[in-house]
Length: 318
Image 1 (tube, rainbow, N blue to C red):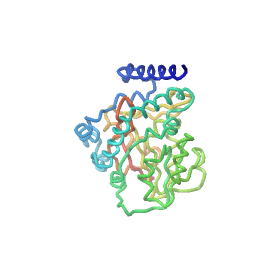
Image 2: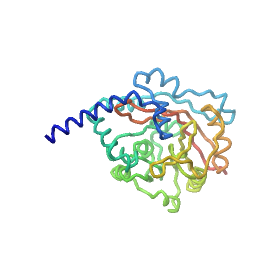
Image 3: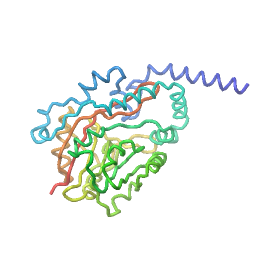
Image 4: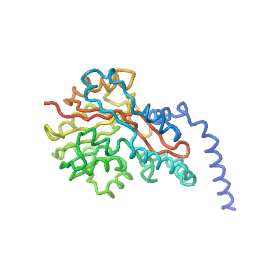
Protein backbone atom coordinates (compact mmCIF):
# COMPACT_ATOMS: atom_id res chain seq x y z
CA UNK A 1 0.00 0.00 0.00
CA UNK A 2 2.80 2.38 0.88
CA UNK A 3 4.49 1.69 -2.43
CA UNK A 4 1.26 2.44 -4.27
CA UNK A 5 0.84 5.72 -2.38
CA UNK A 6 4.43 6.68 -3.18
CA UNK A 7 3.97 5.92 -6.89
CA UNK A 8 0.74 7.94 -6.93
CA UNK A 9 2.43 10.85 -5.17
CA UNK A 10 5.37 10.73 -7.59
CA UNK A 11 3.06 10.76 -10.61
CA UNK A 12 1.15 13.67 -9.13
CA UNK A 13 4.40 15.52 -8.55
CA UNK A 14 5.48 15.01 -12.18
CA UNK A 15 2.06 16.14 -13.41
CA UNK A 16 2.27 19.22 -11.19
CA UNK A 17 5.71 20.17 -12.54
CA UNK A 18 4.59 19.78 -16.12
CA UNK A 19 1.39 21.70 -15.51
CA UNK A 20 3.21 24.75 -14.15
CA UNK A 21 5.91 24.67 -16.80
CA UNK A 22 4.08 27.23 -18.91
CA UNK A 23 3.92 29.56 -15.91
CA UNK A 24 7.71 29.78 -15.62
CA UNK A 25 8.07 33.26 -17.02
CA UNK A 26 9.91 36.27 -15.63
CA UNK A 27 6.86 37.75 -13.86
CA UNK A 28 6.43 34.67 -11.67
CA UNK A 29 10.02 34.69 -10.43
CA UNK A 30 10.67 36.59 -7.20
CA UNK A 31 14.48 36.56 -6.99
CA UNK A 32 16.00 39.50 -8.95
CA UNK A 33 18.81 37.31 -10.25
CA UNK A 34 16.47 34.50 -11.24
CA UNK A 35 14.16 36.99 -12.91
CA UNK A 36 17.07 38.29 -14.97
CA UNK A 37 17.94 34.73 -15.96
CA UNK A 38 14.43 33.98 -17.11
CA UNK A 39 14.07 37.22 -19.02
CA UNK A 40 17.29 36.45 -20.90
CA UNK A 41 16.99 32.70 -21.46
CA UNK A 42 17.37 31.14 -24.88
CA UNK A 43 16.55 27.76 -26.37
CA UNK A 44 18.84 25.36 -28.18
CA UNK A 45 17.55 26.25 -31.62
CA UNK A 46 18.62 29.86 -31.22
CA UNK A 47 22.26 29.10 -30.44
CA UNK A 48 23.99 29.19 -33.80
CA UNK A 49 22.01 32.07 -35.30
CA UNK A 50 21.11 34.24 -32.34
CA UNK A 51 24.30 33.65 -30.36
CA UNK A 52 26.59 34.94 -33.08
CA UNK A 53 24.57 38.11 -33.54
CA UNK A 54 23.32 39.05 -30.11
CA UNK A 55 25.59 37.60 -27.45
CA UNK A 56 28.74 39.29 -28.74
CA UNK A 57 27.33 42.38 -30.43
CA UNK A 58 28.79 45.76 -29.54
CA UNK A 59 28.67 49.24 -31.02
CA UNK A 60 32.19 50.60 -30.28
CA UNK A 61 31.14 54.19 -31.08
CA UNK A 62 28.92 54.16 -27.96
CA UNK A 63 31.83 53.14 -25.72
CA UNK A 64 33.75 56.36 -26.16
CA UNK A 65 37.23 56.70 -27.60
CA UNK A 66 39.23 55.52 -24.56
CA UNK A 67 37.15 52.35 -24.05
CA UNK A 68 36.57 51.45 -27.70
CA UNK A 69 40.33 51.48 -28.30
CA UNK A 70 40.74 48.48 -25.94
CA UNK A 71 37.53 46.63 -26.86
CA UNK A 72 38.12 43.00 -27.90
CA UNK A 73 35.55 41.45 -30.22
CA UNK A 74 34.64 37.90 -29.13
CA UNK A 75 32.82 35.17 -31.04
CA UNK A 76 31.01 31.90 -30.45
CA UNK A 77 33.87 29.38 -30.36
CA UNK A 78 34.17 25.59 -30.10
CA UNK A 79 34.58 25.48 -26.32
CA UNK A 80 31.46 27.59 -25.80
CA UNK A 81 29.49 25.41 -28.21
CA UNK A 82 30.67 22.29 -26.39
CA UNK A 83 29.32 23.67 -23.10
CA UNK A 84 25.98 24.42 -24.75
CA UNK A 85 25.78 20.95 -26.25
CA UNK A 86 26.50 19.34 -22.85
CA UNK A 87 23.81 21.48 -21.27
CA UNK A 88 21.28 20.44 -23.92
CA UNK A 89 22.17 16.79 -23.40
CA UNK A 90 21.82 17.01 -19.60
CA UNK A 91 18.47 18.77 -19.82
CA UNK A 92 17.09 15.77 -21.73
CA UNK A 93 17.83 13.36 -18.86
CA UNK A 94 14.24 13.44 -17.65
CA UNK A 95 14.64 11.23 -14.55
CA UNK A 96 17.77 13.08 -13.45
CA UNK A 97 15.98 16.39 -13.88
CA UNK A 98 12.96 15.12 -11.93
CA UNK A 99 15.26 14.05 -9.10
CA UNK A 100 16.98 17.45 -9.13
CA UNK A 101 13.62 19.20 -9.08
CA UNK A 102 12.34 17.06 -6.21
CA UNK A 103 15.54 17.58 -4.20
CA UNK A 104 15.41 21.34 -4.79
CA UNK A 105 11.74 21.55 -3.80
CA UNK A 106 12.41 19.79 -0.50
CA UNK A 107 15.61 21.57 0.53
CA UNK A 108 15.31 25.06 -1.01
CA UNK A 109 13.64 26.52 2.13
CA UNK A 110 16.73 25.67 4.22
CA UNK A 111 19.66 25.45 1.76
CA UNK A 112 20.88 28.06 -0.71
CA UNK A 113 20.54 27.43 -4.42
CA UNK A 114 24.32 27.36 -4.79
CA UNK A 115 24.67 24.66 -2.13
CA UNK A 116 21.86 22.61 -3.67
CA UNK A 117 23.67 22.73 -7.01
CA UNK A 118 26.86 21.70 -5.22
CA UNK A 119 25.17 18.68 -3.65
CA UNK A 120 23.66 17.66 -6.99
CA UNK A 121 26.74 18.40 -9.08
CA UNK A 122 24.75 20.59 -11.43
CA UNK A 123 24.33 24.26 -12.41
CA UNK A 124 27.86 24.74 -13.77
CA UNK A 125 28.66 28.19 -15.13
CA UNK A 126 30.55 29.22 -18.24
CA UNK A 127 32.04 32.72 -18.52
CA UNK A 128 34.80 32.41 -21.13
CA UNK A 129 36.75 29.80 -23.03
CA UNK A 130 40.50 29.27 -22.79
CA UNK A 131 41.07 31.08 -26.07
CA UNK A 132 38.90 34.00 -24.98
CA UNK A 133 40.75 34.23 -21.66
CA UNK A 134 44.14 34.27 -23.38
CA UNK A 135 42.97 36.81 -25.92
CA UNK A 136 41.86 39.20 -23.18
CA UNK A 137 45.13 38.85 -21.23
CA UNK A 138 47.19 38.83 -24.44
CA UNK A 139 49.06 35.69 -23.46
CA UNK A 140 49.95 32.46 -25.23
CA UNK A 141 49.19 28.83 -24.27
CA UNK A 142 52.63 28.44 -22.65
CA UNK A 143 52.50 31.60 -20.53
CA UNK A 144 52.94 30.97 -16.79
CA UNK A 145 52.88 33.10 -13.65
CA UNK A 146 53.23 32.31 -9.96
CA UNK A 147 49.90 32.86 -8.21
CA UNK A 148 46.21 33.50 -8.88
CA UNK A 149 43.10 33.90 -6.73
CA UNK A 150 39.53 33.15 -7.83
CA UNK A 151 36.96 34.91 -5.65
CA UNK A 152 33.63 33.07 -5.37
CA UNK A 153 34.93 30.16 -7.42
CA UNK A 154 31.79 27.98 -7.28
CA UNK A 155 32.56 24.42 -8.39
CA UNK A 156 35.87 25.49 -9.94
CA UNK A 157 34.79 25.02 -13.56
CA UNK A 158 35.90 28.52 -14.61
CA UNK A 159 38.92 28.33 -12.28
CA UNK A 160 40.21 25.44 -14.40
CA UNK A 161 40.20 27.63 -17.50
CA UNK A 162 42.57 30.10 -15.82
CA UNK A 163 44.45 27.86 -13.40
CA UNK A 164 46.61 26.03 -15.93
CA UNK A 165 48.65 29.23 -16.33
CA UNK A 166 49.62 29.49 -12.64
CA UNK A 167 51.81 27.48 -10.28
CA UNK A 168 49.62 28.29 -7.25
CA UNK A 169 45.82 28.54 -7.42
CA UNK A 170 43.83 29.95 -4.50
CA UNK A 171 40.04 30.23 -4.27
CA UNK A 172 37.30 31.50 -1.97
CA UNK A 173 33.75 30.17 -1.71
CA UNK A 174 30.90 30.47 0.80
CA UNK A 175 29.01 27.28 -0.03
CA UNK A 176 30.29 24.18 1.77
CA UNK A 177 29.37 21.70 -1.03
CA UNK A 178 31.16 23.93 -3.54
CA UNK A 179 34.21 23.96 -1.25
CA UNK A 180 34.25 20.16 -1.48
CA UNK A 181 34.43 20.40 -5.28
CA UNK A 182 37.31 22.90 -5.05
CA UNK A 183 39.23 20.72 -2.58
CA UNK A 184 38.87 17.70 -4.86
CA UNK A 185 40.52 19.78 -7.57
CA UNK A 186 43.42 20.58 -5.18
CA UNK A 187 42.86 24.33 -5.03
CA UNK A 188 44.02 26.13 -1.89
CA UNK A 189 40.95 27.48 -0.10
CA UNK A 190 40.95 30.82 1.73
CA UNK A 191 38.17 32.26 3.87
CA UNK A 192 36.13 35.13 2.44
CA UNK A 193 37.45 37.35 5.24
CA UNK A 194 40.93 35.84 5.22
CA UNK A 195 42.41 36.31 1.76
CA UNK A 196 42.94 40.07 2.29
CA UNK A 197 45.12 39.44 5.38
CA UNK A 198 47.45 36.65 4.23
CA UNK A 199 50.07 39.06 2.90
CA UNK A 200 50.10 37.22 -0.42
CA UNK A 201 50.08 39.16 -3.68
CA UNK A 202 48.63 37.72 -6.84
CA UNK A 203 49.53 37.91 -10.50
CA UNK A 204 45.83 37.52 -11.31
CA UNK A 205 42.66 37.90 -9.26
CA UNK A 206 39.35 36.92 -10.81
CA UNK A 207 36.07 38.43 -9.64
CA UNK A 208 33.45 36.89 -11.90
CA UNK A 209 29.83 38.00 -11.54
CA UNK A 210 30.39 38.82 -7.89
CA UNK A 211 30.40 42.63 -7.88
CA UNK A 212 26.59 42.90 -8.02
CA UNK A 213 26.12 40.25 -5.30
CA UNK A 214 28.37 41.60 -2.53
CA UNK A 215 27.53 44.07 0.23
CA UNK A 216 30.48 46.44 -0.26
CA UNK A 217 31.61 46.29 -3.90
CA UNK A 218 33.86 49.36 -3.84
CA UNK A 219 35.64 48.08 -0.74
CA UNK A 220 36.08 44.72 -2.48
CA UNK A 221 37.71 46.41 -5.50
CA UNK A 222 40.06 48.35 -3.23
CA UNK A 223 41.08 45.16 -1.43
CA UNK A 224 41.67 43.43 -4.76
CA UNK A 225 43.89 46.28 -5.95
CA UNK A 226 45.99 46.06 -2.77
CA UNK A 227 46.45 42.30 -3.24
CA UNK A 228 47.68 42.53 -6.85
CA UNK A 229 51.37 42.34 -7.70
CA UNK A 230 52.43 45.96 -8.39
CA UNK A 231 52.83 46.89 -12.04
CA UNK A 232 52.15 43.44 -13.52
CA UNK A 233 49.16 42.18 -11.48
CA UNK A 234 45.80 42.00 -13.26
CA UNK A 235 42.14 41.76 -12.26
CA UNK A 236 39.72 39.93 -14.53
CA UNK A 237 36.23 41.09 -13.62
CA UNK A 238 32.91 39.99 -15.10
CA UNK A 239 29.72 41.94 -14.44
CA UNK A 240 26.17 41.18 -15.56
CA UNK A 241 24.63 44.16 -17.35
CA UNK A 242 22.29 45.89 -16.84
CA UNK A 243 23.82 46.21 -13.39
CA UNK A 244 21.26 45.14 -10.76
CA UNK A 245 22.93 44.76 -7.34
CA UNK A 246 21.21 42.55 -4.77
CA UNK A 247 22.55 40.54 -1.84
CA UNK A 248 21.02 37.28 -0.61
CA UNK A 249 20.48 37.37 3.15
CA UNK A 250 18.65 34.60 4.94
CA UNK A 251 16.81 33.50 1.83
CA UNK A 252 15.69 37.03 0.89
CA UNK A 253 17.19 39.56 -1.52
CA UNK A 254 18.13 43.04 -0.25
CA UNK A 255 20.01 46.05 -1.55
CA UNK A 256 23.73 46.12 -0.69
CA UNK A 257 25.05 48.50 1.95
CA UNK A 258 27.36 50.12 -0.59
CA UNK A 259 25.62 50.95 -3.83
CA UNK A 260 27.34 51.54 -7.17
CA UNK A 261 25.24 53.81 -9.35
CA UNK A 262 25.98 52.66 -12.90
CA UNK A 263 24.70 55.16 -15.45
CA UNK A 264 23.38 54.38 -18.91
CA UNK A 265 20.70 52.10 -20.33
CA UNK A 266 22.59 50.21 -23.02
CA UNK A 267 25.36 47.65 -22.49
CA UNK A 268 27.87 50.03 -24.06
CA UNK A 269 26.86 53.01 -21.91
CA UNK A 270 27.15 51.02 -18.69
CA UNK A 271 30.53 49.59 -19.73
CA UNK A 272 31.78 53.12 -20.48
CA UNK A 273 30.59 54.44 -17.10
CA UNK A 274 32.17 51.58 -15.16
CA UNK A 275 35.42 51.95 -17.08
CA UNK A 276 35.81 55.73 -16.87
CA UNK A 277 34.05 56.60 -13.61
CA UNK A 278 33.79 53.65 -11.20
CA UNK A 279 37.06 51.73 -11.65
CA UNK A 280 39.34 54.82 -11.53
CA UNK A 281 37.77 55.72 -8.15
CA UNK A 282 39.41 52.64 -6.64
CA UNK A 283 42.71 52.96 -8.51
CA UNK A 284 42.05 50.54 -11.36
CA UNK A 285 42.75 51.21 -15.02
CA UNK A 286 41.05 49.48 -17.95
CA UNK A 287 43.29 47.38 -20.18
CA UNK A 288 40.73 45.36 -22.18
CA UNK A 289 36.99 44.64 -22.28
CA UNK A 290 34.75 42.30 -24.23
CA UNK A 291 31.11 41.22 -24.38
CA UNK A 292 30.37 37.58 -23.57
CA UNK A 293 27.35 35.46 -22.59
CA UNK A 294 27.27 34.28 -18.98
CA UNK A 295 25.94 30.74 -19.40
CA UNK A 296 24.48 28.34 -16.86
CA UNK A 297 23.42 24.72 -17.24
CA UNK A 298 19.66 24.34 -17.59
CA UNK A 299 17.01 22.10 -16.08
CA UNK A 300 13.79 20.38 -17.14
CA UNK A 301 12.39 23.73 -18.27
CA UNK A 302 15.26 25.11 -20.34
CA UNK A 303 18.40 23.69 -21.91
CA UNK A 304 20.50 26.54 -20.53
CA UNK A 305 20.22 30.09 -19.25
CA UNK A 306 22.13 33.14 -20.41
CA UNK A 307 22.87 36.65 -19.14
CA UNK A 308 24.76 39.56 -20.72
CA UNK A 309 28.30 39.87 -19.34
CA UNK A 310 30.98 42.50 -19.65
CA UNK A 311 34.43 41.06 -18.94
CA UNK A 312 37.12 43.58 -18.00
CA UNK A 313 40.89 43.29 -17.62
CA UNK A 314 42.05 45.91 -15.11
CA UNK A 315 45.45 46.87 -13.75
CA UNK A 316 46.48 49.02 -10.77
CA UNK A 317 46.95 52.68 -11.60
CA UNK A 318 50.41 54.11 -11.00
